[in-house]
Length: 309
Length: 330
Image (cartoon, rainbow over all chains, first blue to last red; front, side, top):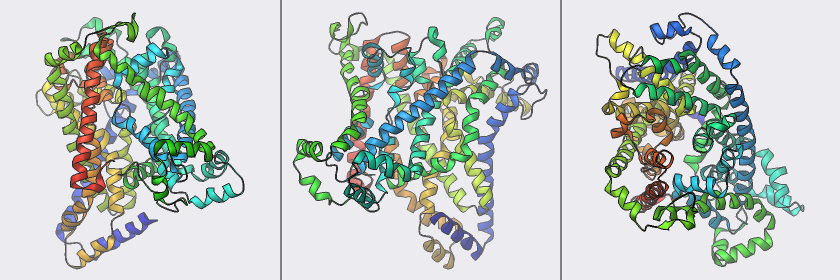
């Protein structure tokens, strides 16, 4: 609402009078934004175009904004291989199941944190917030997961360590804070307990908040590669995520690039350029395609988290 | 940014704040909640367990920093070496390199991203055409959702010497090729560009929201008094954005010794020719842990980083409290 009003005001403002200086400034702003948007967009176009180009044309001419010689070979390879479909399954499972677990735990604790009648809430908030200030770092959690919990080489290592995120809990609590207390109080007078109130009254009316925080979690599960790198070895390659497959391709490529000369032997073992680009399209495509529909929630989440919080 | 003491913005739950502060400290509150809010305690339980297991119990393993850790003997069986691991790290030339790189790259990132984000936010807010604004805003945010693995693979395509997009472009302009993957000096600038590409649009969201929330009557009054739009931006928008800039900068500064592992590891990988300017504490620790399997020393480096980060958070918070109490983190 406020946004529309301010946009209307902006229109009115620009109508007052435009001096030459104003017009120049206006032009600069348009040009600057247009330029930045083009820079943001070009790599995406290059990737998609390269993934549809014949390998021969890529090695001879390099990348172009439009495929020189159209070909679907790279995609055929992607579909024919077993590792990308398998990684897709793993990634979808960890994203769906992980986001569900994350949201369950996050909503539960965030609701308790949002209630003034819950007296331990400041202590609990400190308990959670402290982990953002001080943590054991990489080595400590590596030792915990491999030496104490023995989670390495299992699918749970991709889900359990990322269930909670202190920042997302605070964000969710901020959403719950916006709900009038009278709602839960009247339900309490009718005899409902807090658990029933949360799941039957509060959650159904907090869908925008759930969407925002859920998306933050889902994105981090979808883009997971780091835990794969640390905890899953090559004998369990059926547990690789999509992003980790890309990471592996990248490592081979970087290794070759750091060698002084392009050795023929090395180049032969590398995945073809079109194949690499097709892998990127396949793994990132869902995000880019869903993004226009979800953008509203990301924007909302950031605004609630940073401006109000 | 009072994360811990934030009050509900609308409504508010019945009991005034004072009553909860006065009632008997940590244990008193806990006993009260266990008795009168058992359901709420139950709701907190999964999160408390998770934080105990995955956030607090690893702290025990920080002891490995003071031991000659051997996987066969375990944490308790390994022998104590006191500060040997720390001495070895502080004595090596890696110490200065990774600390400086982490700090220096983050300073570059914070400064460049903040400036570009503000520029984008101001430009977007001044643009009148609603469709142009909507479409361009969507596009500039998009790169944020792409993981560094993908960006790095893209980069390789852009930067490679043979037929890379940028080198082809340079050649067509009649300029010399740049051998990016063997030239450490260009990388700080390159990383800054990539960081701007990836994060500046996303970062502008908060500034744009702040600008949209500003009182429009000020602008109208200024315009009526004959201020140009440039003057409106210079004397109204920029000063009014100050609080947001300070708040977000404090949050970034508190993480100034956390290198971006995802970014550096994917872009640089094991290319040791580029370590001089790109190796950060996080990548160094990782290599120690996985490649040289010197667990004791990597734990020491990890501990050093956590401690440094904690001190920085405390210092920035104390400084902010003095200068501008409302922006303090806690």
